[in-house]
Length: 181
Image 1: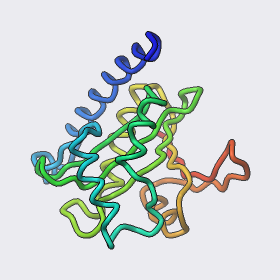
Image 2 (image 1 turned 45 degrees about the horizontal axis):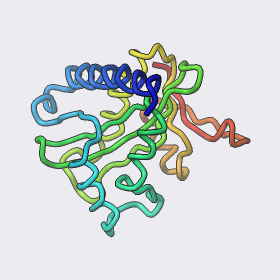
Image 3 (image 1 turned 90 degrees about the horizontal axis):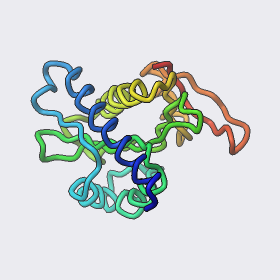
Image 4 (image 1 turned 30 degrees about the horizontal axis):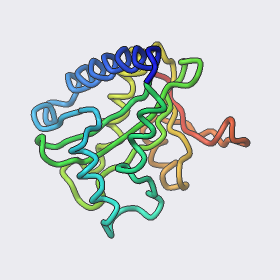
């Protein structure tokens, strides 16, 4: 890792840690003492690997966290990353993203909740967006984008969370949902 990359990794590591603490402080009272927002670590990746074998995992969920995250993290030192834990023991959600080149938008490339039933079912997007907003704010980004929604049901779900759908026409502007920070 060259010096500039190492510097960027350290700088944005501090932004990630700070934004997760800010997001935890804004959790609703019923979740404050049971939800932990952390960066993605080896334990999270080990638990997420089990998702790949679950019959309850959505058919459109093809990302392998174990195989893909390390490469993504090396390529994007400014990345957003989030592991959502219930009672510090059960991994309920994972998300990754990165700021756009200009830094004016934070794109969320993958948001995934644990397959099957878990205590935070239906809250993963809300928790992810809260953490992403805190990170976007620390970067000075004005917009959050959820990239490449997999189907119309997902689009409708995100629209219920205040996002607006944009149908992309080219690879440089893919379909996404957006919301102001």
